[in-house]
Image (cartoon, rainbow, N blue to C red; front, top):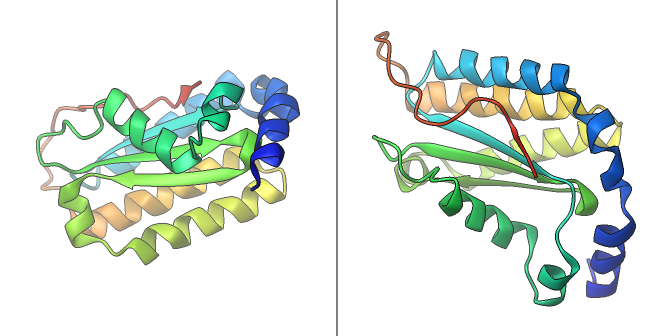
Length: 167
């Protein structure tokens, strides 16, 4: 997206509809999907949904990927016991989805597998199915983590909040 297009999207996009797109019941459902997935694997999944970036950040060249990496650090997704944190980041104004993974997962899971998840999410978002888009991403990420980092059947500490962070 060109800078002017990005500026306009972040200024005038439908960011003000965030409450309708992600009401409390939807956030609760997504949190349940995160928790259910984490019962089957050793990963820690964090969801962050941001309506828009500040224009100053866009003008400074910040991309959705840059913002996701910043949040990965700020939210301490990297700080998990087994280096198996995953951030699923959605930037609504620019229709961008980024998945940032910790080094433990990055070594085991191919980038193409994460890209397939973002493609499925993008399709659901394009149809206006916001809840399903995020739940699909969370469920597919959970299945991927269960395949590469299966749970050991023992209860474990939940290291990151399951409820999506709305920014």
